[in-house]
Amino acid sequence: GQQLNQSPQSMFIQEGEDVSMNCTSSSIFNTWLWYKQDPGEGPVLLIALYKAGELTSNGRLTAQFGITRKDSFLNISASIPSDVGIYFCAGHPQHSGNTPLVFGKGTRLSVIA
Amino acid sequence: SAVISQKPSRDICQRGTSLTIQCQVDSQVTMMFWYRQQPGQSLTLIATANQGSEATYESGFVIDKFPISRPNLTFSTLTVSNMSPEDSSIYLCSVEDHQATTYGYTFGSGTRLTVV
Image (cartoon, rainbow over all chains, first blue to last red; front, top):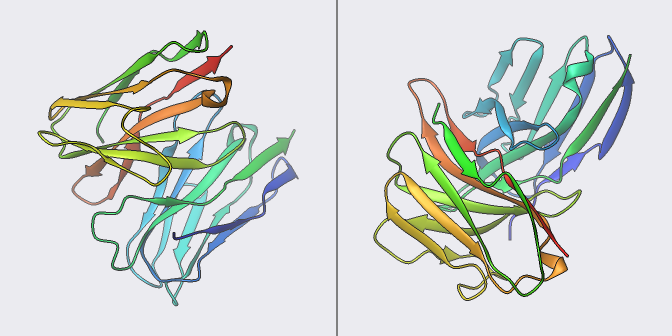
């Protein structure tokens, strides 16, 4: 099946630093979604991307849909302690019909105050 | 976005027993999805539940082990049957969420299952 390669697997950063994580695929995706999961909770949608090249911001978060449609990145600026959690990329492969989302393995973010 | 109520939020169960997880959505949705998240892992789709038809299961998941009900457009249940410790996971339901300017999938808060 389709796979998303998400990196890095984990990050430890100082409060105030910027963060970048990305997802790549060997095949084309029609949609890229970025989720955050807090402990004991379900994933919450952060940003949704629908078109190649699209750059979208949500507060301190910025994500881009790669031109090749095979990758996406998520940036977090000026990190704060509540940014701690697991970030997942997800997407719809091209020609997937009603196939639901494919998820990356997640990036575990730790913020040191 | 859609609001999903999932319960129970957690449970500890004896091996060999079954647990039914409920998912209630505040709006009518065509498809509901059930995921499993094993400890420290990503989300794996178990099945897609459509109202009025049998659920569609992904490879590695079978109806006898994970029976699903979808009696109407706002509700679904997933049963984890004849549980073993390997079934200890977070189980999540999800729905497609179409809003005016965004499209994505909304998730319930999950059911953390521990089988002892």
